[in-house]
Image (cartoon, rainbow, N blue to C red):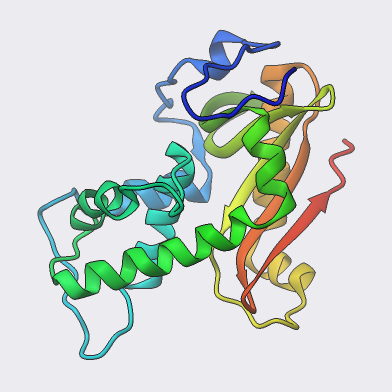
Length: 225
């Protein structure tokens, strides 16, 4: 595997199960993960708007998080020309209408992404074969499960799973306690189990926090069954 630039390069897939790479229709009876439930509960695009609050530096945190995930899905970062123009339609779709609030929200999104781009993990991902927002619908112990994995990539002869979080946290926060409080550990382990069913192997799992006291925090999970 050469260290080719990710931009404009179609990467060869060593393992390409159709169930993994093809879009899946999630069964209605399947128990969806929190990410799917959150998306299904959001109002339809362009039929509502976020009313700006006086002197709010940026849009709501959930809009920033949505834009961050959109940029990650398309692997777009602020060092490239046209970053703001690329995200503006998604900001409008999220319900922002005030031009200044849109600008500040995209700027905050850019700060989080620029911070991540300076982290060694970004370099590893940029060189790797990546699959973004991988949907799944599997049966685990007789229970239908469905969800969406932020990122699955192949590196050093193994699959690795990445889940991104934009929670704003203090520098000295206990990440392990926060993960348990939010149920992120359960979420990631469910993703690992689902991907193991599709891949035939358990991927390594990383939970990446993009806003921990102005730094990036990466937590690696023990994915042993």
